[in-house]
Amino acid sequence: MNVSGLISTKSRWAIVAAGMAVLLATSAPAQAQNAAAQQPAQADGFKFDYDGPIMILYNVKPDRTADFESAWAAIRAGLAKSTDAELKAFGETLYPYRIEGANIYIFRLDPPSKKFSYNPVKLLYDNVNNEKPENGLFTRAEADDIYKKISGAPVENGINVWKLKRAGAPTP
Image 1 (tube, rainbow, N blue to C red):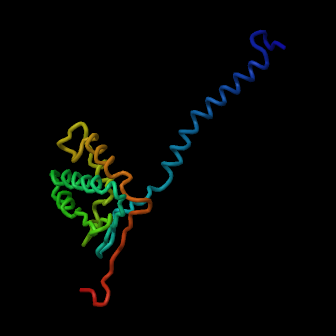
Image 2 (cartoon, rainbow, N blue to C red):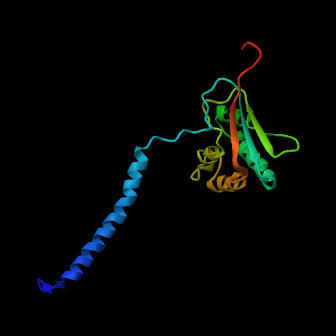
Image 3 (spheres, one colour):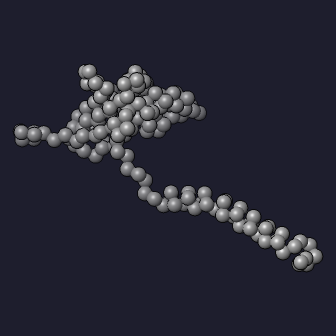
């Protein structure tokens, strides 16, 4: 049956269905963005508001220890070239200690920084400046190269944060 002499009823239904599909496809990403914007920011598990010492332990895959060590050396080198005295001092605390005979690295933070995150991804990408590399600690290419070295180096569930409390003696 030809309605209004232009297109058939089946064709109109096909056009309406296609239009609805396009509408739904284009509104779904916007709805997802709105939902993400309304969710509270996820807490950074490597930014501490703690007065006592903290130890961060990384259990690293045996074949990735050299990558892990060179990544942290590169992060420290980037922080060392900072013009921000606090960030530079923070970088001087980021020395991993390796347990002899194991692939476990320890960062001893005493006291931990309350201003900066110890998350290597944040250290890399929050300090990228491609327009004026002299104003950032890393270019995007440098950050990407360092990230490749550190990404996947720890074994699954191989990062532990331990808050330490003095035992057996009164606190000073």
